[in-house]
Length: 159
Image (cartoon, rainbow, N blue to C red; front, side, top):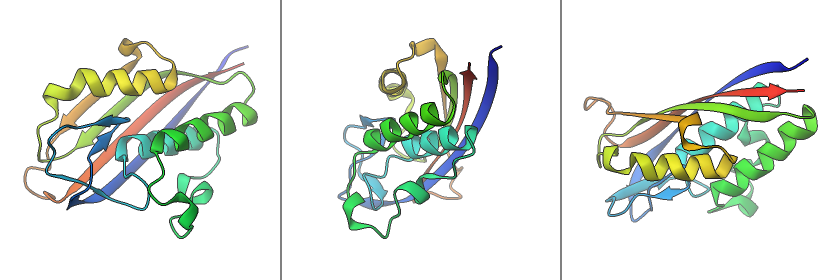
């Protein structure tokens, strides 16, 4: 019997000049600010990692990669997702990601022109076809112009 599991993750970072803006493993070109974070600050991949961990009842990325540990400074978030995927498969034999739904909140720059590239990078990270990854972009309507936030829901099949 095939079981389905759902996980949800949320991440946010303050924006700072001189930092790259990474989303889903994609470097947004000409972004004037990027995430001020201990790792590379890819809020979309951090939310994905938390969603995967939540689907298996394994806590969050702060447990596995505490920001107080200097080993993880500027860590590539793709490494985090690879590690988390291995943990999930170890916990739930035969687990595989079926679908991803994500929302990114960022006032500037506008992300619409980068949708296909971000979707492609995220799908590639998970070994999925592009139509299995949905990404929406929102602004904070000026309520939080100095941050980037991502929310991700994943559907996994197990068994």
